[in-house]
Image (cartoon, rainbow, N blue to C red; front, top):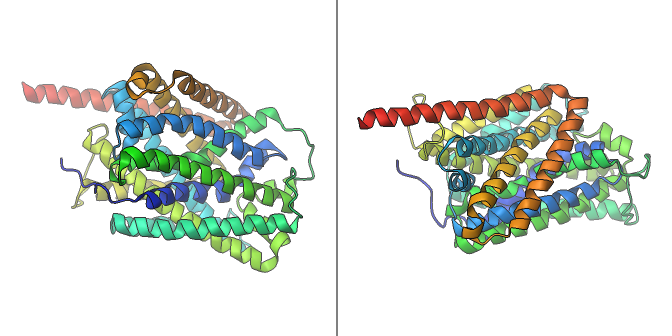
Amino acid sequence: MKSDYQANSISLTSAVSMGTGVMIGAGIFALTGQIAELAGPWFPLSFVAGGIVTGFSAYTYVKMSNAFPSAGGIAMILQKAYGPGAIAAAASLLMALSMVINESLVARTFGTYVLRPFNLDAGSTLVPVLGVGLIVFAYLVNISGNRSVGLFSVVMAFLKIGGIAVFGIAALAASGFAFAPASGSPEAIPIAGFTASIALSILAFKGFTTITNSGAEIVDPHRNVGRTIVFSIAICVVVYLLVAFAVGSSLSLDEIVAAKDYSLAEAAEPALGAYGFYFTIALAVVATASGLLASVFAVSRMLAMLTEMEMIPHSHFGMSGPIREHTLVYTVVIAGLLTVFFDLSRIASLGAFFYLVMDILIHWGVFRRLRQEIGASGWVLVTAIALDTLVLGVFGAMKLQSDPLIVVTAVVAITAVFAYERVFLSRSTAGKRHADH
C-alpha cells in the first residue's frame, strides 16, 4: 500500500506552531478551571509540575524520534518496543483515541466561549452544535493538503501566543503583578488534589506528540523533531504560567471553579473591562480553532499509518481516494459524536486515562528493549514511568469518589481496545497463514 506522506513538507517553524497550537488550544481555555478545582489556590504550579512530568516523558519520544523519525511515530515506537502484536496495536489506538477525545474537548471549549457574549452557559445545546461545526471546518482545511495546514497553523500560533501573552501581562499589570495564590480559600495546597490535577496539566502538554506523529514530514527530522518538541513544551510552560497567575489575580478560587468552562473570559472583564472580555473571546476562538486543526492533521495521519501497518482494520465505506482521506472522515465523525454526548469535565478525564496508560506502556517498552540501542538513560525512563503511575493512580482514586461512572467507562473502554486488537490481529494472522497455504 503506497503512503501519501510528503517528506520535508513541514518546516521547523510550522512544526513548533502545530505543537503549541494543539497544546494551547486545549490547555489554557479548556482546563484552567478544572485544574484549579483540584489543585486549590496554587493551581498555576500544577502547570509547572505538568511541564516537568511532560519533560521526562518527552525524553523518550525525542530519543526515539531522533533515531527513527516516522509519520505515525507513536505506532512506530510501540511496534519496535513490543513487536507487531496486540500490545503495540492497542496502545497506538489508545493514543489515537486520546487525540480524538482532545479534539472534542477543544470543540466544546470553542462553543462555550463563542456563546459567552450572549450569556449562554456550557449546558446550552448550541455548544455541541458549534463544536461540530468547527470539526467540519477542520476537516475541510485538512483535506486541502499539508501546505494549507502548515500556513494556517503558523499564522494562528503567532496570533494566539501573542494575544495570550498580552492578556496575561495586562491582567497581571492590573493586579500590580501580584504572583500570589487565588484568594478566598485556605493557603495550604491539597496534596492529593494537586497531584491529581497534574493529570489534566499533562493533557495540556500532550500536543507535543503531534510532532512525533508527523516526524517523516518535518524538514531534517533527525535534528528538528527533538528541537521542535523541546521548543513547544518550553513555550507552553511560560504561556500557561503567565495566564494562570493572571486568572488567579483577577478571580477568587471559588469564582474560577464556578466559571471553570470559560474561566479566562470571566477573568478578563474585571481586569481589562468589556474590551478585554471580547478580546479574550476572540483569542479563545483563534486558539481552539487552530488547536483542533493541528490535532485533526496529526491523528488522521496516525490512523493512516496504523492502517498501513495493518494494526487496525479499515473499511472504505464506499469512499474513494487515499487512506488518509478516509481516516480524516473517521477522525471527525468520532470527535463529533464525543462533542455531542460528553461534557468538558468527562472528556478531559477520559483523555487523561487513555493518554497516561499509553505513555506508561511506551516508557516501559523502550526501557525494556530499546534504551541501549538509542542511548537513553535508564533512570530517566524509570522516573517517567513512576511519575505517570503516581499521577494516574491519584487521579483515578479521586475520580472514583467524585465521578465513578467515568472511571468505569475508561476501564471498560481500555479493556475493550486491548481485547479487540487481540482478536483482530489473531484473525488477521490466521487469515494470512491460510492464504499462504
